[in-house]
Amino acid sequence: MAYDDLRSFLETLDKEGQLLHIAEEVNPEPDIAAAANAAPRLGDAAPALYFDNVKGFTDARIAMNVHGSWANHALALDLPKGTGTKEQVEEFIRRWEEFPVAPERRDNPPWAQNTQEGDDVDIFQVLPLIRLNDGDGGFYIDKAAVVSKDPEDPEHSGKQNVGIYRIQVKGKRKLALQPVPMHDIAQHLRKAEETGEDLPVAITIGNDPVISIVASTPMEYDENEYELAGALRGTPAPIAEAPLTGLPVPWGSEVVIEGVIEGRKRELEGPFGEFTGHYSGGRSMTVIRVDRISYRTNPIFEHLYLGMPWTEVDYLIAANTCVPLYQQLKKDFPEVRAVNAMYTHGLVAIVSTKKRYGGFAKAVGTRVLTTSHGLGYAATVIVVDEDVDPFNLPQVMWALSTKMNPSGDLITIPNLSVLELAPQAQSPGIVDKLVIDATTPVEPDRRGNYSTQVHDLPETAEWLTRLQRLSAGR
Figure 1 (cartoon, rainbow, N blue to C red):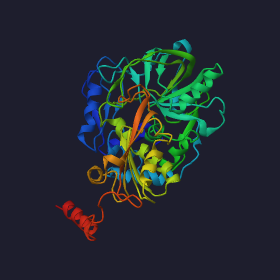
Figure 2 (cartoon, helix red, strand yellow):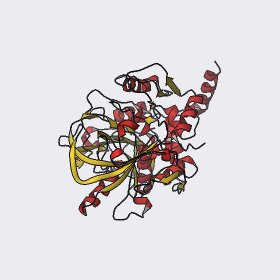
Figure 3 (cartoon, rainbow, N blue to C red):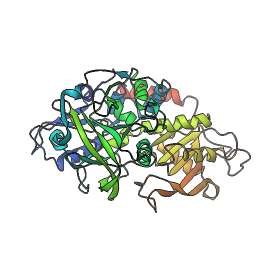
Figure 4 (cartoon, rainbow, N blue to C red):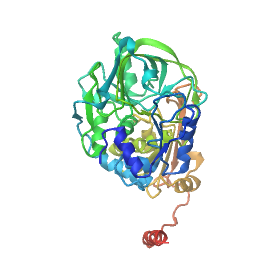
């Protein structure tokens, strides 16, 4: 089934044994974040967490780790919770082939039940805000889908953006948002500021599970996230019109915050414990003036812990980073077989490919660096043969151990762009990038001695199935 809101998904997680209700009283800090930090360590079937007895709050409901396991991610895509990682990526690719599926506009969104406007806006009355890591510079909203439009072409639905960005709460009606230059919202803001305008935004919190997935998917600039949501759901994504800005927002959100990014205004933001597993320092970031908050009665605040992998964010941005890179590479190189970019949002990407001729794998690797996502994220690309499964790290390490010759298979390209959060960059935003060719040389590349590689016995696949069946029956 397709979920139209967070609450229906939480109900399914509960029925499937994938939601843990913490009934005992907990401290807002550090208990909630520490529990969400710990939860993914329970394994690939780790549950979501639900807190409604938070010390110091009279009426708090906080959901954590909603996407924080492969079991929960599978259920979000309406797959059996035991579906494996590689199979989920393959299914994501299959559903991408149905893209685009136009969204469906609906009336009477549940988030319209309550409203705060103008000087009456007080985000602290609506959300039970907590810090996630002890070095964070304040309260953050880090799993909201932020909606904006291209100011030069606002009627082009493909140029609208639904993205997840970190948002620091600076006051009752003031927020700070980090627009990474490679992301669509940064392009929208640049265009607005060039004409001296503010940029209207709608920030939606507590969304259905597929909206969170597509909002963190690195799509191309003119691709519509709601149209991808429809393809992943197998049915049109429900949306509604935000009353103040007119922006299209998810119909089933818990909270919708509307306002503007104030043009050419910046304030200190951070530090924040980021998806890289490191703190980012304080930086000068954009300021949002909040003009309206709409919210469901008794809203659920969906929050996301992120830190040293693996945490929920790593599950959320795993499959949906692999698939766009795969789709973009296949357009130029149909020989590409699979892409594994699950590691820290694709800062490392592993690509398996057939080869046309010597040097071909290096061309595939450098192409990764010029994809829309690779421009700002891919820092190291490992290319392996088509018979090496990039999701099987022992096989990848075997390829690195036996195929890669440092004298000719390490291609370093200096001074390329990377997001400023990447801690390995010597200058923020600039890094040397590396392509590692761990493929078997083919003509006219005659290096090495690869004429006698061992392959699986023909009966191996049959015996694997038999052994799995026998093991299951023990």
